Structures are given as C-alpha cells and as structure tokens.
Length: 191
Image (cartoon, rainbow, N blue to C red; front, side, top):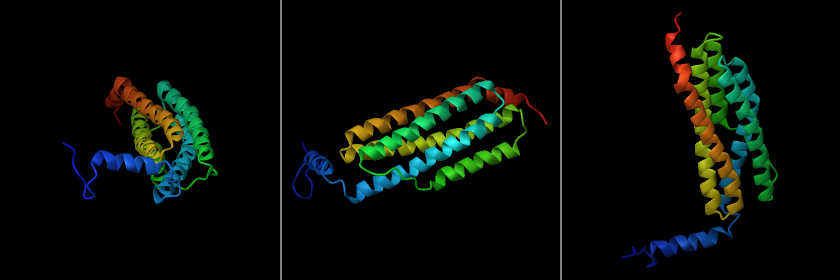
C-alpha cells in the first residue's frame, strides 16, 4: 500500500515530480549551494596539490612517498576535472577558501614539526593526516554526486563520481600501508 502525503499524492509520485522539476530549476537555492560547494572543493584540491610535496618529502617510507607522489598526480587531475565541471555548468572555475582543508593541512604540518625526522612514527602521523583529508574529500564528493543527480546534472555526477572513487582508493591504500608495516615499525621505536 502506498503511503499518501498531505496532498494525497503517493511518496513515489512526489519524488518523481521533484526529479522532473530538478532538471529544469538550475537557478534554485540548491543549485547555488551546489556551485558554492564546488568552489570550496576546488580550493581544497588546489591546496592539496601544494601540500602533498611537503608530505612526500617528510615521509620516511618509500612506499608512503610513492603513495603521496601518485596522489599528487591524481589531485592535479581532480583540479582539471573540477574545471571541466564548472565548464559543463557554464560557470567560471572559481575557488572559495575551504577552512576545513586549511585546518586539516595545518594539523599535518604540525605533525611534521612534532615528530622526529626519519621515523615510522612520523609516517604514522602523516598517514593519519592524509586520511583526514581523504575522508573530507570522500564526504564532499559523495554529497556533490548526490546533489548533481538531484539537480539533473547526470554528466557532472559521473565526473564527480570518478573522483570520489579515486579518493576512496587512496584512503584504502593508506590504510594498507599503515597496517602492513608502518604501524608495526613505529611500535618498535623508542626515545
């Protein structure tokens, strides 16, 4: 039995009506919010491109250095994809400072300052800092994919989904590096 809404329409009918409207309402508050969030993640990705070389240089493990180098190249591609998304929406690519990423990357810089050079303990800290960035990106891209679909931007959703999947893979790689050796190496370090 279908649940009726206050207007007498079924929930499925309301969803269908909302989906039809979303494909034509590109000047809605939601569309403006979506564009604003794109500006935020665009700034974040550009900032990450500047930060990753510092993390790569501070890492001790060659495997972690390589992971940071690969993610740097991916992040450059993410910037390019976001520029493509802005173009697809007929908007100029603009960045809006992302306070969250700025804070997370500052925390990463303090890990470098507060840990001993050439130690697995520093690598543990770098992995944790990098995963905080990844988790922010995963949640942001996940939300953006959903909003793009809601707004009827199917092609945009597909582009953003590609980046979302890469962010998830990077997070899994960092977990693997930590679990397979770095955490255990750090456990053996003493003052």
